[in-house]
Image (tube, rainbow, N blue to C red; front, top):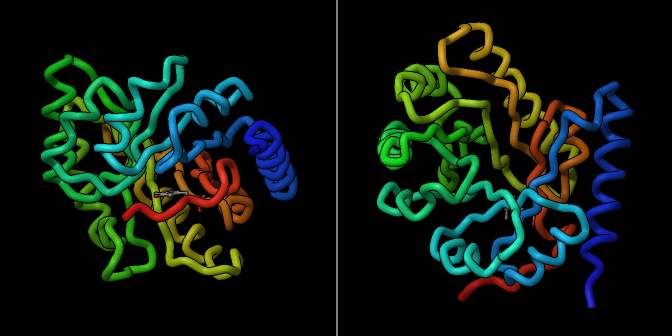
Length: 232
Ligand SMILES: *Cc1c(COP(=O)(O)O)cnc(C)c1O
């Protein structure tokens, strides 16, 4: 037994409360239900509970799962991405959150060009400057933004981060602030083909703090679907 519907409702309420605390409108924040490692049936169950946006992190798993979800959901790709796998996402996802280098953006551009379409992307920033994490370094973001903005079949919509983990969400708050500040800085450059309206930040343990700091997309897995059994 699980209670996906109740979990989603509770998370939406917590998002609303966080918005209220800082004077934001809850309609500015969208919940991405992270369904990685979880079966298609649970995605369908969440859909019937009113959730229609899902996030996936592994290309192969997404390829297998997506055809099994026979209800009209929207998908975002949020995980680390190798250029040679981008082709499997073409025409299947609405947004890619994890663009952290020009070569990847170029390949995404090439794939979507084949369909004569534009894909929304976020630039992932390594706000903790952690060696183990992907994401472009904060001081390289401006140069990356300039380069990617020239590609005609990708649209930069904002930024994403995956900050250093902490059990105390207050420890993560400075990283969310940093992402917000970086977005404001890029926005002030007024580059063509660049919006900074989307901030993808916050997960099960810290999404309320992320909302307080300006998140417009929160990526929540465990708090909706329960613990994930680690893949072998
Ligand atoms: C798995 C994952 C999440 C969700 O994490 P939870 O702690 O389960 O909410 C969010 N973002 C990314 C990029 C992930 O890979």
